[in-house]
Length: 440
Image 1 (cartoon, rainbow, N blue to C red):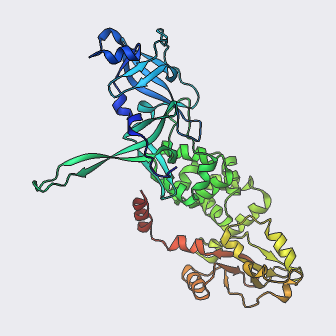
Image 2 (image 1 turned 180 degrees about the vertical axis):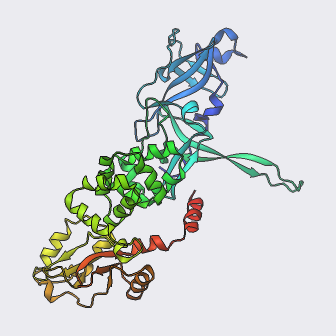
Image 3 (image 1 turned 90 degrees about the horizontal axis):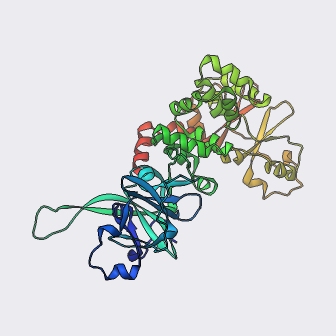
């Protein structure tokens, strides 16, 4: 199955807009086929919408039609639809004559009223996630049921002609496989965004952050609500947001909720966000954070945010020189750190004085029985907590470092600066905006 568009049999596919206002006929299909035209007394109503269910990972199945008859709206279950044709909808002869009002059921939505002309999330392996608008939908008969299979976007094109200089504009439809689309559903009383586990795993936190920043407030809240089911992912996404978006999000949360979020964030990012809180909230939030993390954050908050101390991450891998390589490898399995922080294992003595380092990649090539003191490198590049940004960038560039050790005046290891922190500050804001436009 394609990741982008699907080529279904056009004879069993219809556009949603093409079905709206079609007459709904009840009777024998063979008898109706023999008639030259539809009599008024055979029309039980007209189609005004279609209902689909969005609780599955497959194409959303159509569960029924919304019909208007004598000024009132009624629901017709799809099982009573005998045939869908370009000019009419034919109901089975045994369909009930007492039609019931439409009552929303969990995860059901009206395609025209609830989703058409609204934005949806387009998730594809071929493209960055983006927000797209639905101009129409394709409804396709798959086996014995009808399903929502494609989102259709209206695009303008021109007809090539050798007789006219002016090329008339025509409307073209670009189809997107609905398996790669997630609709916003917060405005639908019985539904919510389907963006869950497997789809979230396909999207990088920075791309989710881009979606949040390009969405309107209601859409952003819905994405956050879906992301929030995974606390670690939520923290990763908020770390990627611009400062003003971070502040906007946390301003609506309680102190307890902010503390929980900060506990899942990288210490340097958490410290930056705490610094953005109002003075009256900062201390109460800090007190709610687990003690060790709280202490780390208080240290980071004591540094200027533009210095090595303010940029460093205090959660790093450091080991004693007297342990074996095998012990280091075993401990590495339990670390849940930024991958760039996993690149280097720092070696310190009992007083936390930096002695040297070992690259993680080197460890797997060493004899497991070797002691760290016999294999580490003691020519470790370091920078002091008060160093400014140009000094940091120059040193990391000169030594081709993924992470740079930050030390105090007594050469005690305070943390490390990673290359992703540096790149984030080096990318100009206008580049970010241009990249986001190009992606969409």
